[in-house]
Length: 191
View 1: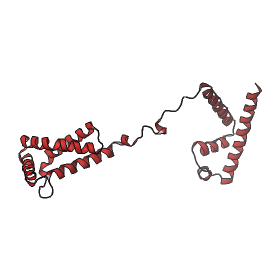
View 2 (view 1 turned 180 degrees about the horizontal axis):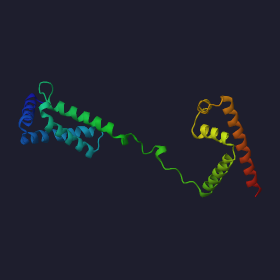
View 3 (view 1 turned 90 degrees about the vertical axis):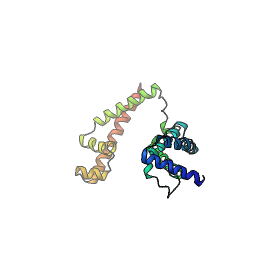
View 4 (view 1 turned 135 degrees about the horizontal axis):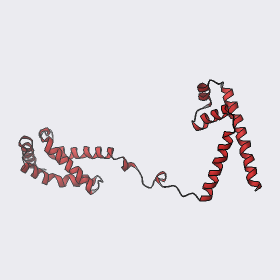
């Protein structure tokens, strides 16, 4: 860009800053808006987003022209830096751009066959019945270990029981659960 053109832009910007000169702004807009949009498109922004961001940059020029200092940089450098920074801010705000639509975790799970759902419900029922048959102190320790995810040490601290007692009660509870579930499985296979 020639120094003569730079001086002209500096004068136009000064007119926008001091007297809100709409004609001066229109000249700057006509020159810079298409260039800013093209620049933003080259940074992989879609057409609409690039146009919106270009409008934002031009609004910055309209509102903050008084902050432009021609002795520090050309107007094009200033505007393109504003555009670059606004684009970075937009990317940071847009969390959806970080999601990969082909990510397996974002895909719906396959529909489970009805017979498998019925089997799972029956299994859940048997487990609940077996759990209900446990003595209360064993049931509470199993609940803390496997439903709350506490370690044996944490359970010991929380309940005030010795660590060995916690471990043995959980082991006893599993023995009872195993026997109860094995008996249910035997009854199911007899039919």
